[in-house]
Image (cartoon, rainbow, N blue to C red; front, side, top):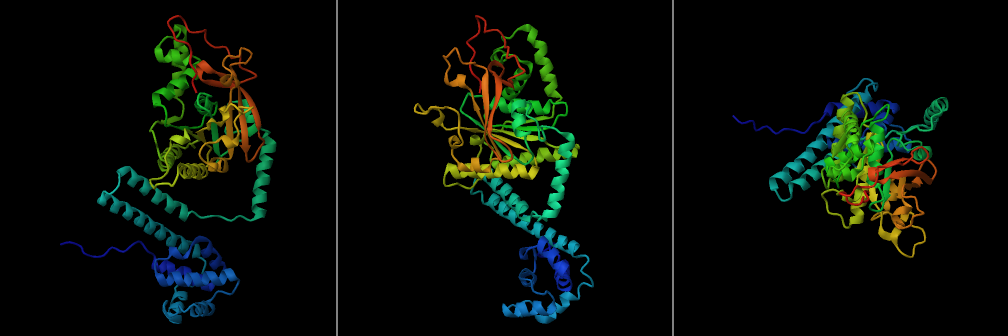
Length: 472
């Protein structure tokens, strides 16, 4: 026989009454409840109205008890709707003490989260049955709905200055004892690390350049330096332009210092084979993860990143950084934006939220506009105004870096050092701006420290090889 009973949404009516009763017993309980809950968290409509009245009394600085609650509800003509003074009395008699208000509030919050998830999932189920939209769009909407629940239910802690000052002094004391120039995650390029103190947790880092300047090479070099360090940290790389095999070829070529084109066509010196296999072995043991799905949405990136981070935590490790190559190849949500500029703004905000949510640096690559190459421009060095499509990129990023290679703009000038490169720090919230000089070994697609690397590369291509091309 079929069960025709209506299944009620998750609720904790007794806990709701206990919260409201605690609020009318003790003022500290009001403070705790207001911090933890809002009126939408209550399932029963009368409880929402009572909570709102108690909260308003508290925020005005008035006393909160049975009498003032009744008067507040009477003024707003809601007392009868909630059951009158008799119901308020019943509520206050639900608890003998307000000591457990935290526990009651947590129960109420948990049920509210479950109800919101049910609503989000129900909308998704309806969309699936209707088949009115593409599956990928429905999936994006489902992810967006769940993320909205997570963001809305996040507790925002307000910290007193005295506590915050004490914590910061402790951090300063630790830094003073360590006296380490790099407090974040080292890029492996000393000039850059000296200016940034390493990439800091929760920062959105923008690495931008014109095509063929080496932005992919620099990002992959940084990722390799992190995962191959003495104390390696896991790195997740999203490659939306190149396949996973092409990305790994770059990693191995740079680490082994073998001409990338020679690796592709097989024309490399036999003695380099050992270097290649050793480099491959190092990456085999490295905590490096690559996703080469093209055209991922910002929600897809966040979903995959959370999965990898959760898996690393289960293994007792912490994901160290995320690299995205590159931002303009990403999509926004499934909802149509009025312009590409709005879509890029959404992507930018989504990546910043991801950096803060996972508490790690997110390094996003970006294209620059063609203005750097305009004939009337006296200096081809990139500026913040050259960022393509959205001012939100500049606004959301904590660190903005540009790559500038003079040889790119003066290919026929023998006086220009082909290996000389600059990493321009155009914006840094917690540090200086300026230029970090590095060396770019083009045939290996490798950036190194300018002062310590000789920059020696393989001999010029032999007679059966084509002229070396540039790899960005």
